[in-house]
Structure formats: structure tokens, C-alpha cells
Length: 81
Image 1 (tube, rainbow, N blue to C red):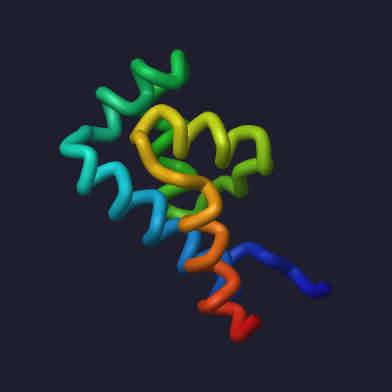
Image 2: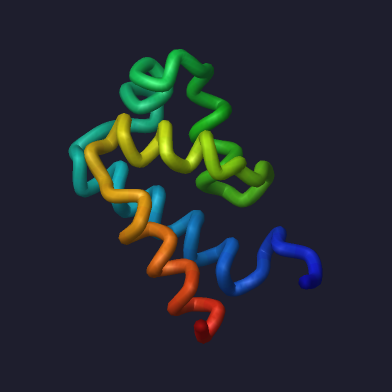
């Protein structure tokens, strides 16, 4: 496994999380408040400056009302799996 930052899967993850947030009608600030994190946390993972851990993915998905399995499937599809 090579670097994951800016890989097709990472780009798909960034896009999926941002789209899920937008679909939930949340701003970065509103999501950050739900996560008890600064707005820059959301901005950094949406812009690819920061990777997120699996536990964070689940917390983010829960905060926006998304199914983490759906997000993971988007990443798998982007990676051709």
C-alpha cells in the first residue's frame, strides 16, 4: 500500500464527506460544533491537508447523519475494489 494522501480513494473520501455535510445542510462551523472541534479540523480534512482516522470517520458520519459504510463504499469504488 502506497501513500494515501491525494490517492483516488483519499480524494473520494474528501468529496464524500463534504457532500454528506452539504446534504445534511451543515456548514463547516456547525459540523465542527457538533464534533466539539475547531472549524479548521473540518476544513483541513475536506481540503486534504489532514487524514482522518477510522474512529474520526465514524464520529463525523454520526454527526452528519450519514452511514459510514456508504462513505467507505465510495472510497472502495474510487480505488476500483
